[in-house]
Length: 162
Image (cartoon, rainbow, N blue to C red; front, side, top):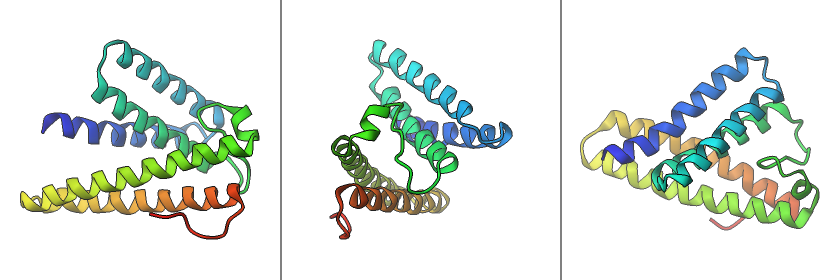
C-alpha cells in the first residue's frame, strides 16, 4: 500500500510544486524547461537504478508538468511541443501518433484512478475517495482535451473512442 501511495502522491506533489513555482516565476517557459529537464534527469537516474515505480511516477509527473506548461504558455491552436521534440510537432503524423499515445495513457490513468477510488470506497475511506473523484474528473477533462487535439490533428470531427 505504501508503494501505491508513493506512486499516486509523488506526481501530485510535483505538479503542485511546479504550479506554485510557475506562478512565482511569472509563468515563463524557462521555468517549465528547467522542471522538465530535472524530471528527465530523475527519470534517467531511476532507470539506471531499475526503480520502475519511481520511473512510472516521474513519467506521469513529467506528462502533467508538460501539459501544465503548455496550457499556460501557448496560445490555443498552436502546435504544441511534446517533451522538447520540435521536429515531431511539425510533422502531423508524428503529432497524431503522440496524441494517440497520450489519449491511450489518459484512458489507462482513468481506469487506474477508478480502481483506486473503488478500493478507497470499499475500505470506507470517504475522504480519499472524494480526492480521487476530483482527480478522476481532472483526468477526464485532460483526456477530452487530448481527444479534441487528436481530432484536429487527424482532421476528424468525431470524438475518439473511449
